[in-house]
Image (tube, rainbow, N blue to C red; front, side):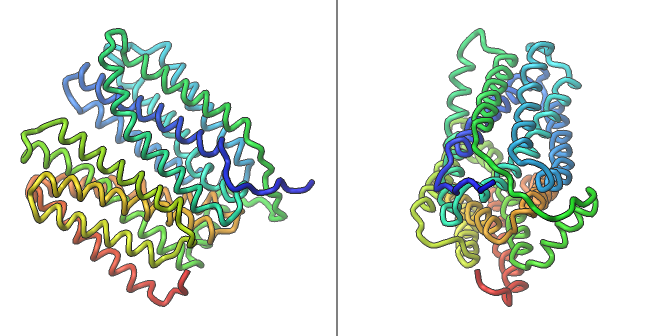
Length: 398
């Protein structure tokens, strides 16, 4: 059977993550609002998020092997099916006024299992369908759409909360509908899996071979380390922003929303910039993007002025989006198709495994260093990329 011709763009692969992101973001918006409203505390929310994070980390460990050994389209369909069944199933039994803790934990675990498999599978399937020269442009468009979803969903969620009949069950049904539409889009995807002559390995042998593949490619190691560091510090910035607004800007919720919007708009601009880029992804540009992000945080932490902070968040979002798009593209370019699932699984292990530690450290540090925490984040990023860059300076330029 002849292979399907590779395309320049693919609408189902573009729209499916965007629609799922809108639904999932609305669900999280509703979860945060209604759980705190029902319990007058963030304790239950913290437990739910902690268990969900652990589930996501376990999913990252298993997903890569399955993605590389089975039909990637079918894995995408299965992950969307698990998520939509979770939403519709719990919508039928949950008490929207006072949801039980075990129900929220079970629901979150099911959704995070779906997420753990869907995102790496989607990234791994892209090089099988799109032409190599189209990868960066497609990743840029996809990232821009996800950032656009982050801008739109808080506004849409706020509008929904003004409707008296809206409750937590409504947000679950909306999320379930988004996964259903995403499922239909993936089902319509024309996909022919690459047939490999390699014998299937056992789970642990396959996982071990994935780590061996990364160790044998210094640029992939560098990419994973930089991505983990960058995204840990991105989470730290999002953690510090509400503290800064609360302590220095009268706890003005509107000013906080402007900062989050600035991050998202910066991400959109970074994505749009790379849709026009003619050059392929390279390591030097990744370092320049991270240096720009670090400088933005150094300035924001050194000058306690809201206007400076707002511009800095926009620049930070721009630089981080540019870095992430290039890092994904570089990984897709450097990785053999039969290893893509495992490599992205290892990638997300690095992100999801270290991020809680970073949030824990900066969560406590911010109480003491306050606005200067942003400068500390900038300094940490500069030291980190300097150390990594020095260690990998002899790697052949890509």
